[in-house]
Structures are given as C-alpha cells and as structure tokens.
Length: 288
Ligand SMILES: Cc1cc2nc3c(=O)[nH]c(=O)nc-3n(C[C@H](O)[C@H](O)[C@H](O)COP(=O)(O)OP(=O)(O)OC[C@H]3O[C@@H](n4cnc5c(N)ncnc54)[C@H](O)[C@@H]3O)c2cc1C
Image (cartoon, rainbow, N blue to C red; front, side):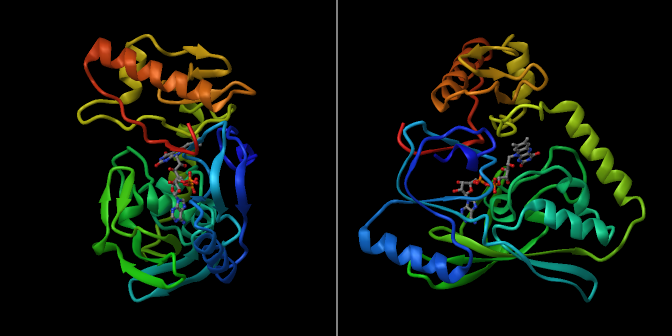
C-alpha cells in the first residue's frame, strides 16, 4: 500500500514498488521499466499527492533514499548547497539556519523533499525574499529514461506559481541551490516566527497535503471556500478543515475517493456561488 508514503495517508497498492538507494539502482529500475514497457510513477516526500484507492499501475519509485547533502560551502559571495533530490527540505533548512541566511524563513516548516520542491516551485505567500524555490535554484540534474544525466540551468526552466516545467521527461536527481552569503543574526528568530504562524494557521494535527487548491488570480482559495460556508464540510472521514479552509484533512481512515468527493463538492459549490473555478495544486496519481 502506498498510503504510508503520502502525508494524507491514503492510496492503494503499487503494481511494482521500488526504493532505490542510489543513482545506479535508479538507472537499473529505468532499464527494467523500459524492457517490460511499464508505466512509471515517481514520488518524493508524498506531501502533495492524492493516490487513488485502486493504486498505481506499473512501477512506482520513491526517491526518499536517494538523499544527502553533497556540497555546502561558500563560493565567492554565495553559499552553495548541492543535494540529491530525495534530501528533505528540513535538511536544507538546517544548513541555511546554521549560516544565518534568509532562505531559512520560507523553508521553515515546508514538508517534502528538495526534488519535489523544485517540481512544485514550493514556497510561501508572504512577501519575503526569497519565498519560492525558483529564487534559490541554480541548476538541476535530470536522469532521462535511458539513464543519461543532463544538467539544466535554472534560467532554462519555466517557473510558475507552484509549477516548474522544461525539465521533463525524466527524474530530477540532483539540485544546486545558493543564496547571498550575508549572515543575519535575526534569521533564527524570523524562521521560528514563520514556523509559529504555520502552527497557528494550519491543522497540523491531522494528515493533509497542505493547500489543496491553487489561489485563482485575484482571489484567495481559502477565503472563497470559507465564504461559501464550506468549512467543516465532511464526506466519510474527509473534511474541509475547520482551521484552514484550503486544507482537506483525513479525520482517520479516510479513502482517496472520499477526499476526491470533498474536492469536487468544494469546486462545484464555489463555482456555483462565486463563478470562480478552483484548480487543484495537489497531484492525482493512479487509476481513478
Ligand atoms: C502540512 C503541509 C503544508 C504544506 N505547505 C506548503 C507550503 O507552504 N508551500 C508549498 O509550496 N507547498 C506546501 N505543501 C505541499 C508540499 O509539501 C510541496 O508541494 C512539496 O514541495 C512537495 O514535495 P514532495 O517531495 O512531497 O513531492 P511529492 O508530493 O512526492 O510529488 C509532487 C510531484 O512532484 C513529482 N516529483 C517529486 N519528486 C520528483 C523528482 N525528484 N523528479 C521528478 N518528479 C518528482 C511527483 O511525481 C509529483 O508529480 C504542504 C504540504 C503539507 C502536507
């Protein structure tokens, strides 16, 4: 079952599942996929995924063991970090905190892995600098399906709100990130405060995937959902959080189908009452 690999704790079985420990094993898995003509699915930290109860066909690869910081050093006026894609964002946070550098503030409390952070251009809404992965990423390395690895500089990628394109097809395996090496003694306090805000606003006592819907241009998804009276809307064990209307929480034992039913209900009601369409930030995987 894939449920333990997702922050929502839902999702059925993978037809085949593999947790490679290094890039050679990953390359071997890609050769297997090619020889058997299997569909391939990649999961990182699983903190932005809705995996179907029916599970995923073909091979699912979880990258969490392909992790580690390879470089963390000053280069000229910048502090440079190179890491494998499965390294958790919290490891990256530790480095920037130790160096007292400002990326610590937006990274504080961000779940998932660095690779997933690039794919989703993860970040925060607050007007701080930096606030998204686009601002700290210098280059990525992508393993193509034939096993070859290609380096792509950040400028060649297309970065949008919670989305990054221009690297597919393949698997992001390594990332280089950097920021101005200008330590600021107040960074620890700022990062702690950012984490406190998260704790006070988000329903972190229940499994979730963070914000379910992208903010439509000119609107806040949470405000639209709240205004439509949907906070607390429950189907089975899935509920629009009472604390944060853009979170759907698993009250314990929810199924993916229940979560999807809540997502669709919210989209329908918001469209009907406000004429605004809500698109999901969360990524649906598997057979639906
Ligand atoms: C409580 C909570 C709070 C959150 N708060 C925020 C927030 O403030 N801001 C924010 O932006 N997000 C937030 N999120 C969402 C989520 O943490 C981010 O989107 C995160 O960057 C996803 O990373 P991941 O490793 O978990 O990716 P996954 O969820 O595993 O995958 C996301 C997508 O990336 C693909 N993918 C992952 N790794 C790779 C790789 N190495 N190569 C190719 N494809 C890959 C997957 O196939 C999938 O399509 C929150 C989630 C939770 C649970």
